[in-house]
Amino acid sequence: MKIIFTCALQGDNFRPTEAEKELGIVFVEKNEAGEHGRCGRYIGKPQPFGFGAFECETDNESLEIRALGFLNRVHQCLPVWKKFGAEIVTLRIDVIYDEQCNFEISESIIAQLHELQLPVAISCYCEMRNDNGKGGIKTMT
Image (cartoon, rainbow, N blue to C red):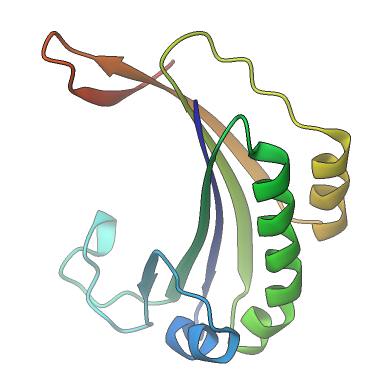
């Protein structure tokens, strides 16, 4: 099982490059306001807002340590992200599995999520393997 925690930030005046420099972090995906979008509805058009995605990937065995470290870093970064124009901040947890999905969140992770007071989206995906051993992700509906 692979678990990806993402903190997605956006704002009309959000400046992700400046936030990266001040904090010493790297967004896995970012767009400055006015840059042409590389995917989605703004592909090839100026994006009207700045966007950044800060991410942490882990497995079920090291979930507690990695998740708490990531959420603590988000807590530290929030004031700076807001200073650089982040208006909408959302946490996303993607759970990618290849067999039965039993995803459990500990009390300490729930407490940290509560402290952040941010919306949280959780998605589960089944990673399907084909006959040659290559995989892909299939969304479960």
